[in-house]
Length: 53
Length: 488
Image (cartoon, rainbow over all chains, first blue to last red; front, side):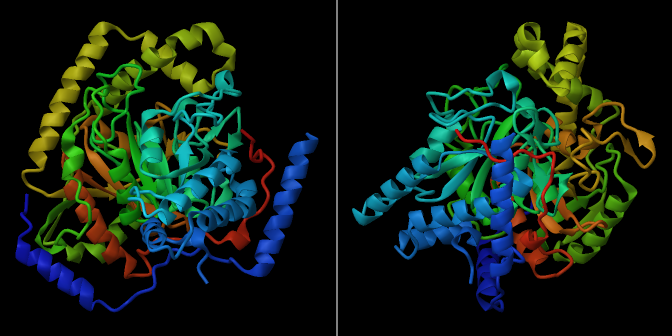
């Protein structure tokens, strides 16, 4: 197993510090007001359908 | 603007500690996302919003008093419906327990509460976790966030789908034949199968069989690592429980990939893998392989009987857990549980003994393999997500699968060797669904495997072809076969 030296840890940290800032892609896609309105409507319909049957 | 529910768990926890995000605000954001999306995928199957609001308020009060905060303070957590939650319906996906409300928390849930986590609700699972297609007769099927007609994988499928859609920042899972990894791969999130004992599991019917483990799921390695630290609390009631949790670093720094030798294999030398999936894997290796010192195309020697060995030892668990249920409530059980238990009851002591002997050989060969490499990388799943109406994968590359779990061989071969494995998102497959890879190490190397996965995740995030896929909620559509959310 390769051993991670203190020097390499420092090198990696330095690289991380210098890396260009990059937006994390974590946000859900398509999250617009119109979509939210439509989804809310669908959610209500699904709940009503469940209550009926 | 980023909704609070889309924040990384580590970022949300940091903001909570700085009093820049209130646990109530985060909880309401998660509830809002559940309201918008759960009807389409059926990931959460039981919610207790009122109790969760009380827990969030309590966390806020603790912050206001300046108390020392737990690792998960104020973070809403989804709990797989195989873990008992006090006061919140727990069904194990079985009609036998469809109205069961436990009075006590399972150990893992209690540890999450101790760390300040807000138990938001239960996520769907196949009956007793049997199978990798999340559907049961209590709650119906859980759909894939990228196409609700397709399976999200399983058995921790509800947790994976919930995470992908931003319904919660963290969720729990368990893994026998890939239940933490397969749904992570299918939904584009991160799941970790720890070495047996790292996360204590005291509810195994036969406690000397360590294949079944509990573990964390998140949208990134750092998030998953946060939950793991709260879960890895030794408990002597699990005979495999150890102090290995102390070796999990408090902060991940990332391994120096340039020093590592990795083995890559599309099929681990034993699994039937869809040709297109194997090709996607090879193409991805060509993209990230240069980050490592050395990439060797080879696989550990799982031998000729790894399938029979795993299936026999798995049956021991089924017979131990379900024999009495099968005798008393057969009509309430699903096909997978009945088939597995019955198959196990036909096995002899000689069969079980032979399986133990073979497993010992596999374990030793696996350990020896890691003298020559630092990690093994392979795909998470052998196929792309398939319709959840189809119970399991019956055929791969025209070859009929002899059992309903054979398509999970990429996941259960490492289980048989008692390995630990991180499932990492790695772009999309040939059909546009999330594609996942496993980073595998031998038992007890959890910290090392996490550091490698953490570093590799950063490499993968830099390219469009290998970055984590995120679902588009505007494409969610109604699905007739799914039932809506249940109330506790």
